[in-house]
Every structure is written in structure tokens, then in C-alpha cells.
Amino acid sequence: MLPAQRIVLSRTGILTIAFTFLLLGMVVGGFGPLLEHLTRRFGVSLPVAGATISVYFAGALVGVFAAMRATERVTGRVLVMAANAVSGAGCVVIALASAWPAFLAGVVVVGMGFGALVLGLNQLVAYSSGARRAALLSGLNGVYSAGAVAGPVLVAALAADHFTLLYLGAAVLAFALIPGAAGIAGRLPVAAGRPGRPELLVAVFVIAFVLYVGIENGTGGWMTSHLESVGVGSRAAAAFTSGFFLALMTGRLLMTLAPARIPEEVIILTGSAVASVALLAASIGLIAPWAYVVAGFAIAPIFPTGIVWLARLRPGDARSSSWLFPAAAIGGIVGPGAIGLVIAGYGVRWTPVVLAAVATGMIVAFYRAGKLA
Image 1 (cartoon, one colour):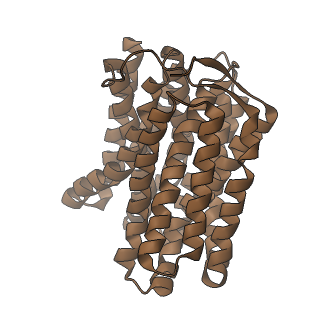
Image 2 (tube, helix red, strand yellow):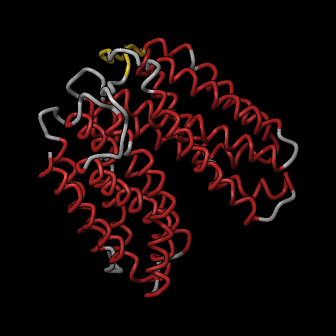
């Protein structure tokens, strides 16, 4: 096991991390609009093409756990370089795939690389030197959100006629970012001894993160249907759904202006409370569209700030906050489905109430974490 080293991010390192987040957002955000193109390119049905997203998250989960182990053995620079190389290789496989199994193999490889990057990049910023880590991490996650907005546009413009060039371009960007990781110095701290199950504080954070990701994905997945059920037109409902994600991006970018003296706990609990009220207000048809946008703005800083908060509470062992990333993956897989089961039983008009209840559970979990700290 390598000795712990203070993590320092140069300007080059921060720019490299920012462009890597942008690449992650563009590729992952483009998977949804890509599905129709996949049915024509590989001759598969839409449900089969939809497996792309599940396959990606499965690969990402493997990448997260691999990165959790790698942090005990390699520097942050090596982890980011290796993960970018894996991501680039996966994009090459996708670009050149002539059969469906080969395409899925490429998606798995991309997922593994991206999973390692999501954990590695967030952790490196969270444990880096500097008083404004929460603001920096929120801004970088805002760049990811910007990529997620741009990805569908690129897929719509290029996937039909230039599929191979689209993913070769992504591969070139991933490979080009490898040298920039030289601007990352140091290694994530890992406490001595065997890694066991997470302690109670970490377990409470994990629960809170599962609920948070369930809210983010559940809102993005169900608000369009709910708005249509209360009389909002399909195009307008889709536009407000885009507005939710734009509010999420804007909120994270604006967090870069937040004073460093504001405690992470205050940011998270305030955002959670506002989101809970806004989601409940979305049950009122007249203000529902704007209430969802407010909820997106309110939850924007929770994910990155939560990582920094736990990193501050457990500064000597990055494995503590590492558990938040499998939690995020599980929340993304289970959350929307579980919310959907409740909505299926009671009707889509109950969507805001269900989401508000989940948000209330998140508040309780984060409040409990603050008491355990």
C-alpha cells in the first residue's frame, strides 16, 4: 500500500477533470436518443436496444468497485490515466462494432472506464487541498450536466450518418485527456487495515444518496407523464423536463459562487427542504411545471456537496466516501423503478407526493448523518 500524499490539482489538472466530466455527460446523455438508431444499425428491437443503458450501468458498477480497490495501490494520476484509456478503448469498440454483441462489449468497457472516472474524479476533488472544494466539485458536476444536455443534440445530428466518427471522436478526446492527468498530484488517503463494511455514519450517507439519486432520476423520468396528466401539452411537458435538468446544471454551476464559510450540512439540508416543498407543490396543477424546475435547482448541490461533507468528516480514509458511488448506481437503477411501482398502484397524479415523500426521507437521513458526525 502506498503512503498517503496530499492531493494537489494544478490548473491543467482541473481543466482535464472538467473536460473529462464533459465527455462523461455527452456519452451517457446520448444513450437515450441513440436507441432508435441502434434498432436500425444492428437490426434489434427497441426493448433490446434499451438494454444498452442497463449494460452501461452494470459496467459502471464494476468500474466503481475496481476503482475503490485501486485507490489503495495507485496514485490519483495513474487511476485517471488508466480509466481514460479504458474509456477510449471502449469508444473505439463501439465505433467499429459490426454486430450487436460487439457493441454491448464496447458499452461494458466504456461503463467500466466511466465508473472508475466518476469515483476517481469526484474523490480527488473532494480530498484535494483548498477551502472551496464543495464549490469546485459542484461546478465540475455542472459541466457533466452540460455534457448531458449536449449529448442528445450530437446524437441527433450525427448518429444516423456518422455513427463511427461520432464515437471515434469520443475516443480521441478520451485519449487526448490522458496527458492532462499529469496535473493531478498525490494519492487518496486510505486507512491501514482491511476494508470492511461501512460504519454507521457511512451507511446513513449511503441511504441518503440512494434516495437522492432516486429523486433526481425519478423526477426526470416521471415528471413528463405527470404534467401531461394535469393538462400540460406533450411538447411543453418535455420542455419543462429539459428545464428541470437545466436547473440542475445551473444550480451546480452557481455553487461555484457560494462562500466557503457556508457549512456543507447547511447547503444540503436547505436544498433538501426546498426540494421537498417544491415537489409537494407540484401536485398543484397550475404551478406544477415551475415547481419541478425549482426542485431541480434545489437538489443541484446535494450530490457533490455530500461527497465533500463526508470527505471532511472522514479525512483519513477515502474508502468511506467511495461507498457513495455504488449507492448512486443502485439509486439510479432501483429508485425510478420503485417509485414507478407506487405510481402504478395509485396513479400518475400521485407522482409529486411520492417524490416529496422520498425527499423527506432524504432529509431525515442527512439530518441523522449530521447528528452522527
